[in-house]
Length: 339
Image 1 (cartoon, rainbow, N blue to C red):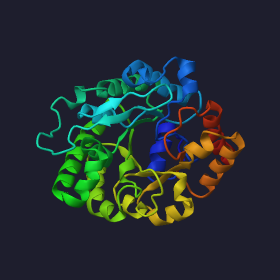
Image 2 (tube, rainbow, N blue to C red):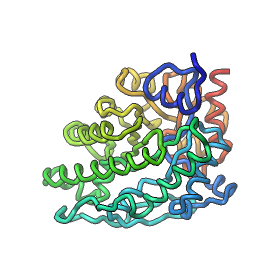
Image 3 (cartoon, rainbow, N blue to C red):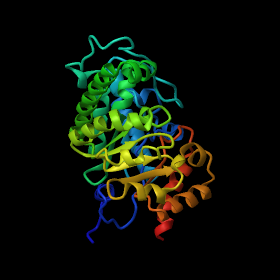
Image 4 (cartoon, one colour):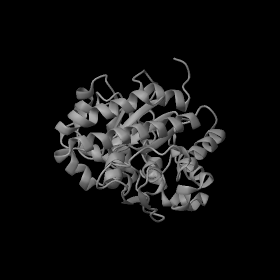
């Protein structure tokens, strides 16, 4: 077996190839307040400044041992460039969408010609280049973004999106197509800038919001289009208990499926997805990583590996107030498993 680099190991694990040990990283947001203070890259400034964005992302790789660098820190970059209004949040609260461009109709809806020059997209692309320069070729960079279903609901507003799904299917499909196309353009721009993996968080595709039937009928084909048109390994993260749709998720063409602790049984999930995709997760961000203690994180991490998780990772975005020592414990769990 040839020696793995962090990058070749993660890519091999996500493709279902044999690896010497399970990689440990975060495919979801990694900015924590403790590291913002250590490196002087606080939110909200590090959402818009490429240097600070890169600095904070690098910190969670260099100081915690997580085996990838992930940027940015929210799910609002693409939708802002598409016309959503954003509240940039605070030092310990992520940006959020506060206004929607197309709540009534899609009459003038289009992808801006200069999409990649708008909002924070240039900062994200620049941050990826800075990170690549700093880490060299052997450390994987994960570009994170909001998924096409969430983009669509942000463009229309969740309320209109849900209403259209029932009463105006033609508008519903139109906004999904627009969102998918924009998502592909942005994802490929991140890949071109140097991202090795694109990790899509698509909370609105969760069974908490959309029925499994809707997922199968409308969402699956858009996610398939995304994964097939993006020029990299891809990961699909959907929040909540995704057991009702995990079989459909496995048919979406993503190499990795990132799941929360809410799925319950890792072994069972692995049985359902078979060799169609690899499972990423699923150590609880709010209930394990944030509060600790360290030994609980180590126990749960080792158990997840024993149960067959392919990439050990937080089940969702790392909570900003999570202590650095708790993030390090996730890495320790993997190391102890193989000790």
